[in-house]
Image 1 (cartoon, helix red, strand yellow):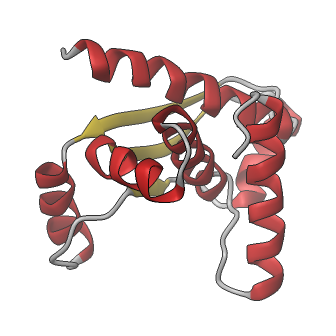
Image 2 (image 1 turned 45 degrees about the vertical axis):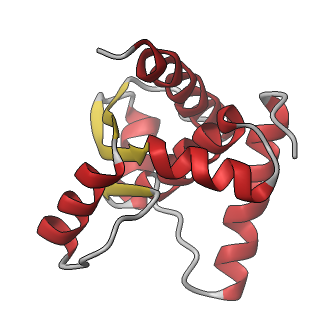
Length: 145
C-alpha cells in the first residue's frame, strides 16, 4: 500500500472513533473503510449508484438508527457498513476550501460515519444537526478551519 494512503487510513480510523465517542456508541462495531482514487470512485459511483461521475465520499449503512441504538443498549457487536473516501478529491477540496488534507479526510470520514449512524441532511433541520455534529467532532480532534 502507498504510505500516503496508510497515513490517511490511520487518520480516518481516528475520525471514525471520535465520531463514535461523540455519539456515545460504546459497543463494538465494525466498518469497512477504503481510500480510493478519482477513477475508482467514479467506477463505484457508476456501478453502485448509477451516477456517471466521481464524488468525494460514499457510505453504505447496513442498519437503521433504531437498530444501532438497540444494539448499543444491549452491547451487541454490529457491522455499521462501508465507507469509501476519494483521497484525490479530498486533496482537491482541501485546496479549494483553504484547509489541510488531514482536515478534509477527517471531515469526509465523520460525515460518512454519521450517515452510517442514521443521520442525514435531507431537510434544513437535519442538515443543521448533522453539520453541527461534524464541526464539534472535528473541533474535538483539533481540526478546525
